[in-house]
Length: 238
Image (cartoon, rainbow, N blue to C red; front, side, top):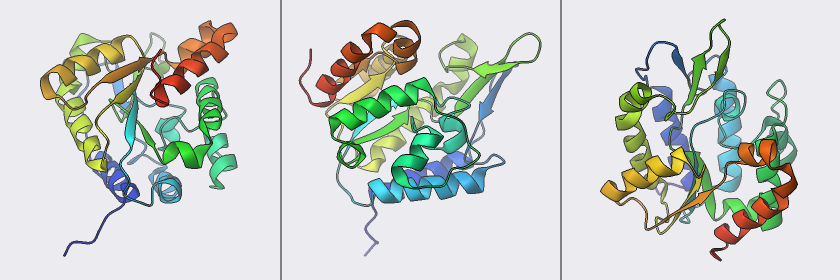
């Protein structure tokens, strides 16, 4: 009889698969892969500790999907939407030398705290991405900046098979597919909806504004958006 696996086992196995993934992207774009980069051993240590702490069981969870990892956030730590400093303070995992706190992670930290804390939240949800590897583009002058998979048509066309396969593989976590929460109510939601129309991965998809949009352009409405997140996660709709 095969050994029974936990959600943590399945997520870490998914990450190991990503470590061996190479993607073709157009000139001027690059992939940031925390699972096979220079800090891959450190990332493996951090992710093993994090998922072992919160996902060492086989209970089904709902997916919360952003677009792709930020190059100074998840693309460094390997843990979606968890800033390095918050990882350190909340899990006890030593992440010295990683990135400083980011506003997006801070907003989600507040939402998770108000939901009941990490133990409660992560018992019900898995946070991940439609594109689970980071993307950057090079601006004139050589500066690299974050890039989303949908920002360039040729990029999206090249990545599409990988994106659909990655979504399908994330259902193997033991996901509750009745509903998926999409962080990014514009292009990310549009792409995920189109894929779902053909593949029927989820019963429904709930769009939520991206924390970056909230913290950079709507600071005065943060509490309003936080309440929207909480109502959605609690299944209370609008």
